[in-house]
Length: 350
Image (cartoon, rainbow, N blue to C red):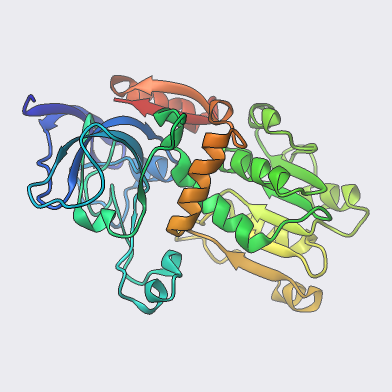
């Protein structure tokens, strides 16, 4: 094996490039994988633009990963063997806090992530430390599932968690605000859960076109209409039973509270900019309408298992979600097309 590999090295906001770097050493109790695919996430775009508190340049990003085991550590005694294909979810739980001990891994008090605390997958090879292997977020890719699509089980896992909390059923109208890849997954899951109607809103018309293969019943261009008025009109003045804000725009959280049906569930899925995270929500509406407001940020191993099975079974079709792949040397093109909304989900093939 050569001593050098190609990797996307982040050196600071708006400063990144493909470089030759040393292939990581295989951890003594871990694995070395050859990366098969690595999804480009909205959080990657934010880090590339503005940095991240847990990322200390120079650094290799990329946390939606699938790969092939090419080496096991000298002291590794786990189940995975050389040549096996793995789906790597990046969340690393401590396993010791009260939330981990009670099975609520998604609330781990000492959570860490691959691509933040350890180098990520926008590279030809990636080391998987012992800690990441301990609690089930690294799994064999199910038979018949393309590694390209196994990589995107990671963002899907958080969406599965959201729908577990939302408890969508066949009497519900579901509104998803944001027609990006996360909005597409939410649309697909809401349909699978049997929602009566799925509405999706965005301010970019080409995004609304890209999401049509996922079967929303109604698309709404929020740049052309008053979103609250339009949704209330569609729902006979009552509002949707479930609203998911799958975007980083503070105003959509305000709108969600305003138009949710009495007793409805509002899921804040997209995080807000840290300097604009208090959008002025009328909490009286929460109080008097009896709303359930739910925050979702990550997932437990069971959600990752479910996401992989949904992809394997074709209930969520990876080929609809991944609208374009890019070789590693075209990383900047992938970033630009993702920022412009020209692709739904971009995946890097090192």
